[in-house]
Image (cartoon, rainbow, N blue to C red; front, side, top):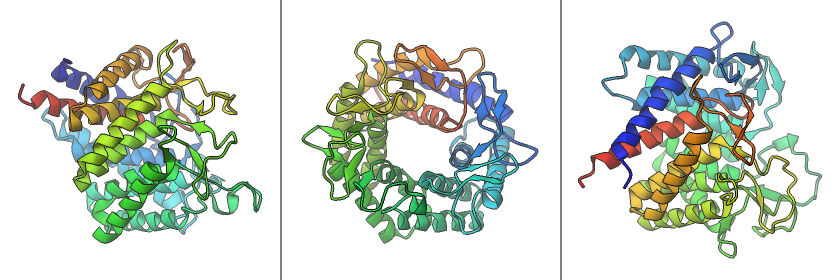
Length: 399
């Protein structure tokens, strides 16, 4: 049996002593507002462009810490610094991050001038949870209103997330992606306090159906990344694509919804799918979970398919630990141990704090950056926070 008490201390210390101090020291832009997140291994800035979804993620993370970390060894000064930094990021997003009608850009320059149009729906979804979580922290009704209104825009765009920036030719092979219904499973619970009950429950049921009954394919025993509009498999590069990390992450979202709805059978099913995804995606030669796979074993268009990414593994830690916590499934616990051993021996930087994001297939560091266009103050601290809290709860259970 694992020593849950010792593991809880390990995850807590990594979060509070090494990861968050890295972002607090290097990320906050005190000159122009918002956050600098293109950071090298030692925290030095290698680019000053600001990606809006990363801004939203950092606002959310700082607000979440403020709202949930209440321990004697975390000072009120530290919590106040988290909140001040969250407000700084939110004000930058509020004034610079969108076009005035809450259409959130994808990228800005350091001063906040738009660089890339609001084509990416995830700029919106992370703004939703950022302002929603900060509204909880501050009681600021303006933040709550921004969250609600942006969520309405997200829901209005589900049939065509990229809008007029969609590159597909008219009448071309029409596909829909797993990423949006997946993230909406999480977003809906994040802003539960801002939504009417009936609306929330209808949204949740729609998301569960899409994830568990549409994108999960019983004939494969796996979740696919893309389907045709009429929910069929497509024998194309996009249609054959699998992303084990996405599927595994989605399962802890589903477990949370199963708790919220008191549906233990949904949690059990999510556990079994997560285990199947981990077994399918695990690199049996070098360890770690592949980034992308093809369900027919054909060559992939993603040249990074065999890399080992930080978020895939930290999300797997959350999912497997949550699965064990909620069901007692020992397969989940064994997977948590396997991935824990891989993560702590490959991704952690003992010298500078934060984690590496990109390893090659053999598990060697491929890029030394700690933050960039795709990696920021989100997956690592969120995962450490979740695992710390679950491990503490497990440690407190009677033997």
